[in-house]
Length: 131
Image: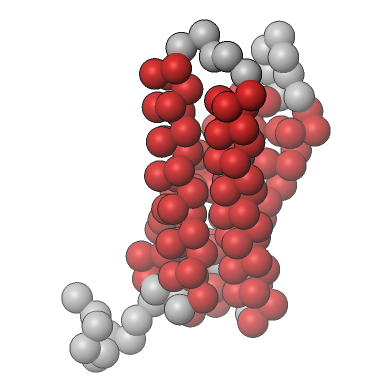
């Protein structure tokens, strides 16, 4: 079980790093290229920054085994699955990107739904933190 918890945390930190790298890439693109709409480009950067902050918060909370981190991580993985599905289809389909998003998402969801990991993220009934 300890290995599963470590894998979940490592994957969440890797995903947070990738989203942060995406923010940097988008900012570099904004500065070096001329977008068709500056408003849209800036809005996209703001949304990705918010996503990066959220994924970093979830990754850090997963180290503490905060109960909310499990649900937030599952939500992030579902969002990642939807992007992966989109990467497999369409005119600009990129199967490599799809697989790179799909495999970690399925792995994290599977591990977070596994009973020993689920229990590790829960608080005992008598604890003062239990609501």
